[in-house]
Structures are given as C-alpha cells and as structure tokens.
Image (cartoon, rainbow, N blue to C red; front, side, top):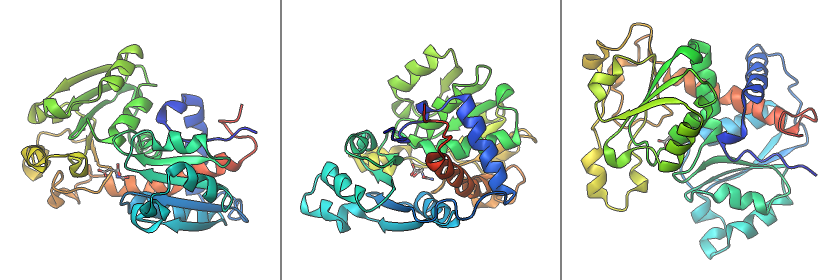
Length: 309
Ligand code: NCD
C-alpha cells in the first residue's frame, strides 16, 4: 500500500503543482463533487496555536462531505500531557481516521509521525522546519498575480525560524528564472540546508540586511513575523522585533505593480493603514488556503493521484 504523506515542499514538482492548481481553479468555480470525501474522517492534531491552517483544513474536509475530529492545544489536552509519545498517539489516532493533519513544535515531527502511520500525515507546520501546504497556497497566489518565471520575490523577516519561508523557497527553486532576495538580520538568515539546496538548483538568490533598498526591486514582497516562540532568550527576540516594517511611508518606493504577501498572523510587520492598498493581497492569500487544501485532499484520496506512482 502506498501512503501519500505530505511532509515537505520538496515532494512537489511542476507537474504535480500544475495538477493541484488546476484542481483549485475548478473548486473556485464550484466545479467539484461536494460529497467526494463522504464517509472519510480527518483528525487535526495541533500541538501549536493555529487559526488559518487548522480551520481551513477542517472547512476543506467538511466542504468535501467529510468529517473532522480535532484536538487543539494537543500538548495540553491530548495524552501528550501525560507523557505519551508522538509515535503512540499516531498509532492510536490511525484507527479513528483516514488522514491526520499535524502541527508540532519539533522540526521533523511529521516525518517521525509518518513512520508510524497507515493513513496520510499532512505536515501543517513542524517547528522551524517546513509548512508545505502554506507554500502551496502562497505559490498559487503568486501564480495568479504574476509570471513566476520573471518575478523578483523579496522575502523579509525571520528567515531562520520561519517555516513558511523554507517551504516556499523550495517550491520557487523549481522555476529556473525566478529571483529571490532574502532580507533578514544576519543572525536570522536562511538555514544552510536551504542555501545549499538553492545553490544546487542554481536558483538566482541573494541575501541582505537592507530592507529599504530591496523593496523597490520586488514584484512580490513576502513579509513574515519574527518567530517569538522559537527564541530561548526573549531579549534577543526584542532586538529584532520591529526591525522590518512595511507602512504607508515606505510603500511609496514599492513598484505600482508589485504585491504584498504575508502568511499571517502579522504582529507589526505590515501597518494596517496599507491594508486597502491594491497591492496588499494577504487576505486573498489566506482565502486561497481553503481551496488549495480542498484540492490537496481530493488529490490525496483520488486513485489517479499525482503522488501515487
Ligand atoms: C505561519 C506558521 O504557523 O508558520 N502561519 C500560518 O500557518 N499561516 C506563520 C507564522 O506563524 O508566523
């Protein structure tokens, strides 16, 4: 039996992305079987806070006729609080459901879970590792607004701990002509594993600390928050908090045809005063999470699945 776990953005190629995005387009046009997942159950196991990811996964399941069993704050309210290992939890939850959506504070947790699971595991964020389904909706959003192949994408903020950055960069590296500029403090630069992968893929990218100079070059500005929960020392966090802020003042130098994205939640990286600017597409981005996750679920349970070889 082949189990189609979704653990990393590295699993996707242009063909599977094309398939997924066309499925998402059909869903947007209401052209899908609303009972496709009737009789199937999704378990959402969230050991870290979430609004968009969990609710959009649960809504996606229900919009396809499936059902959801859930534990939020799983660290507190599941048997993990009593000392149960992730492996045991996964083994048990397996017998209650057909797919598990897992968010966990440890990088690699979804890989670990997949080793013990007979049902697909979907990585909904593993610590400072990856967040592949966020990257799918991010790329779908970018693809709707501009030609990825000729775009300059500026990613800003906590690039070390920001898992959405890692997964999106892996997807972007599939496009040989894309240009990525990473903007972060030196200490929060992209991890070496990602840097190596981009070099191997011959992706055109550069790294800088200069926010003001860089945003004028962007076709897409992808802002992220400093990942407070990953810092052992909150004084260090405070040092970086508020370092990069997009507001009405510096928006003036951003291209008229550029777009501003953010995986959300934002803290202070984007001033709400620019929310109504036509370049601000972060709420549209979040909306796309629902249809992309519906598309992903359809593809997981479809016997003509892109991943099933
Ligand atoms: C992101 C996450 O959880 O990694 N949020 C999300 O899923 N939309 C980004 C973040 O928390 O900063």
